[in-house]
Length: 329
Ligand SMILES: [Mg+2]
Image 1 (tube, rainbow, N blue to C red):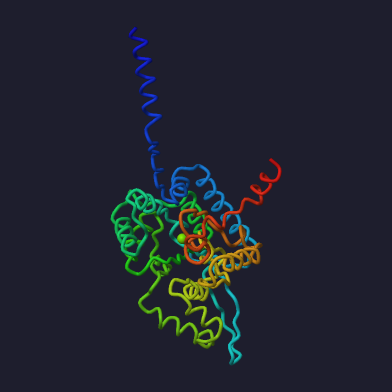
Image 2 (image 1 turned 90 degrees about the vertical axis):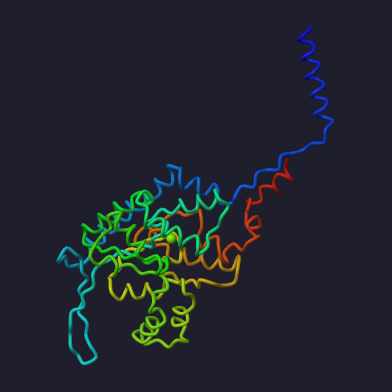
């Protein structure tokens, strides 16, 4: 009897539920970059990819150095060339051999910032990013490098290759960034001289002087490109190339490489096409002297004009599968 009553109660409850208006749970609003951050922080594949890039780079640099006419002196590798001056004099030009690396998501793992932003429903902005840099500077447990990055830099140094860093962190973060790099074992007496930040205090003057040195008018295409965007790394790249012989470039963003793509252009398909073409045009450099790290969390592939806000669903391409299904199933 008891069992029957229970069954009846269950039936009544079921009927009551059926006759009630359906109150579907609103699907939780998941941030669009949640899976990207989960992948970067937890997947073995991300770690393997980073190690693959850095080990490949080590091998490429080793074979380049062995095949090159370089001079090893004072623990450093030098490119020495004879230069003829306009007055006919000949002098030796000696430049240290270097590799150039971006910092964020190329050497330094900042996925903690992205995780915080998702957990607290905050977003990237200069103020939050400034706090993150300060936190990093103060907190050794947050000093994390990409898998294989430090090992690669260590091997490069053994070969006499100097690491140079070009970052879009601004000058206000210099002390904290140096603390992190030193904490990760990248200390060297001249580390500060090899760290190019954005918005250096003498930026406009430095640009002017560089144009003069290169004999370029400010309104020439190269002059305009150098002045185009304060976050464009072109001026700092040219400056680094005047001081060092660069044998390898590392970044997680197309603009970390000496590409010929304007940082701003017509939005959407046009800029994506230009970016793709530039990647194809440099096909022989990827994996030999240009090394790109994966970053699904943020980057110029997503922000800015490449995939304008609101067009994310439209850029998805099913290769015609749905049309095939409608026709054939
Ligand atoms: Mg980066």
